[in-house]
Image (cartoon, rainbow, N blue to C red; front, side, top):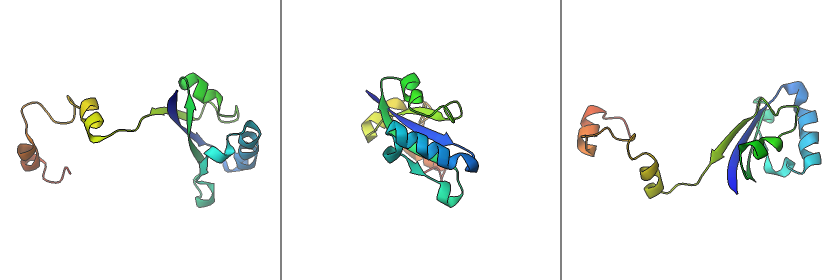
Length: 105
């Protein structure tokens, strides 16, 4: 199974209803909330077979406003592989990158 970051922005007046729906679905304990800070959004990382299945875990109240992003853990080698062609322009080494962009790291 893959892991997905679920972001559920909602209106202040929908907070109680959304929390009740997630509790009824059994997903409430997976979510962290920004509502007490005035950011009416919940975030969770859930496992699903695909993005469509992950989206179905979001209550219909906010399902189509939710952002669903497949996420992965990366180590330095994996990150380098993912960005091997886009991280450093061709022909530039680390020293020339530092000279061209002294604050890039």
